[in-house]
Image (cartoon, rainbow over the protein chains, first blue to last red):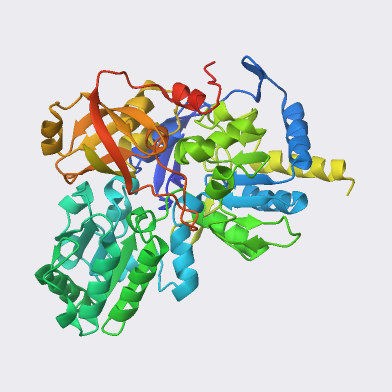
Length: 429
Length: 129
């Protein structure tokens, strides 16, 4: 059976035009998707049943026992950390926030090591963004800054920018000018009309130089700025000013390099300057399929997009203090619930090591690098494959994940609901 | 040789990301992309192993040539290998320096460890059923 218009849950593009061929309860073929989508839908190797770590190995355990033990661990903790949430749907994220509130824990999502700094910058100066549909149909100048969509968002260029025809840009490659800014000559740089190669850590300086030129103060710009010639900066500023509609997309080259959220703030302020000449927008290229959704759901419920601390009985937010890496590196949490993410692989090990010292519970369909660090792992459905639910695309558009196969695994939202209810029973509330 | 460590996504890393215990995942995330001139300066060829040491750890990686990587930099796909040597300080932002760790690189004959071994080094216990 071929199911049409399936949504890919891998990255923030949430491509919704996949044709997925299903045989029995297995996906055998994916059409229209990128290599990442195909690997996601046809992957195997899921953890068959809940497991519990023993002093010498691992034992299988029932779902009921795993859920009961998880609730007991969380209730007994003084400073529990609930982390992850970006590879699942909104209902699971929502239930996670309710558990955090119930136990006075800290809840953080993967934007903490992704576009968290972008959110901090947006909170300072705002977000002149737009939907990807606007970019596809209007943008004649595209800037990719500190990102490599060819590898991280493989269909971004073909669906929305470089290779996509739009209402006002009928001949994509002729009508659109693509500028790539990076420290590496990446595959994305190879297909750009203009490649600006900057020295590592030079983003803030180059953004400041462009702002000065666009503002008419180009005389203060020296011959070279972080490895970029004055001539190239003036040329690029002119391309941007002459655009009918420009769109900047930025990645972790800005959020993870020296300067972090200040880099992003400077990029937003460059966009502001460009809007004195033409229409220009800026948006982050979000990584996990539903990382944007975790920010949305956290914000609806708590007022804050990530790093929310309920230990005071109210929602408190202070990135740098209440962020997951900081709590782990300080050895502060005494229990952890990890859902739909893999800090064992993606956190500095000096921080992730703390997960092995405390009772850590992992709710995830696969054996991950966090599995060896946890005390209990509970396998669940994969949102967008054997579970439906709501996710948010990188531009904030909500899209409904479809369920393409049926499995015997429970939905992570249902597992979390049972943990939540058990906690309430134990607390006597 | 001193270098700056840059990390990021690659398509092979993304394809194997849900198979963390597999030899494929190990092969695609334990790669150290280097400028060919830097490789020559170290006196090794593509495919040789290097020990990469930072202030917080040491890891053995397989070298791979990349003209796109600047001299004095290395690129390692995000994952447990890169994170074995990245410091956890966030400078009050929540975000570690995933793109800017200073490292020291020397050629080595040591093998590349598997992910299970890395996790056991930090207190974990591999699950290989």
